[in-house]
Length: 240
Image (cartoon, rainbow, N blue to C red; front, side, top):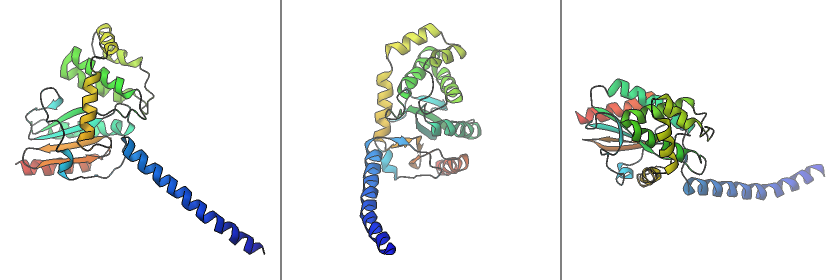
């Protein structure tokens, strides 16, 4: 009798579990399709090159580290509050240290703030643009380096730190605060965001490697150095 009661209870639980599983799958599909998410994967998620066909061409308006005419360009779409972007940042710095000095590889940074989970990231992106406004390209890279160094990630950076960082790297703090309060770079950040979506980005960090002779290779996630290096080497070999 006891076994029969357990069987009856189990028979009731099975349909319920199916319903719950269905709801979880539906939620996952909605969440993934409804908004970009952080991608902490450690494996290359390689797409067809057509995924990057609609991305904005790299030009003088971009923040470029290295030779603007490099045959291989690494275009990173990043969120300053994303912990995976934080861990990925040193990887690309190492790539540039090892492959950017000869002028064959350049790093292009574009904004991809994930508003649904990082409400502060968009203003931080604007702050980096104000740094560039006041101090040029070098100040931009120094500013984001410092943000990634001190931010605890996941929307936890105190906005009061933004002008302090500007002051640390030698910028006029009063002018910086005025720039940030004006919102003059909000449109610039939004354009980068829309470009990330158009080029196939669905999480951060999202990277598109562009080679003069071998097209584009988009991939997502905070790939470790070895995997990124392998992709760069392949592109360099094809570029001659």
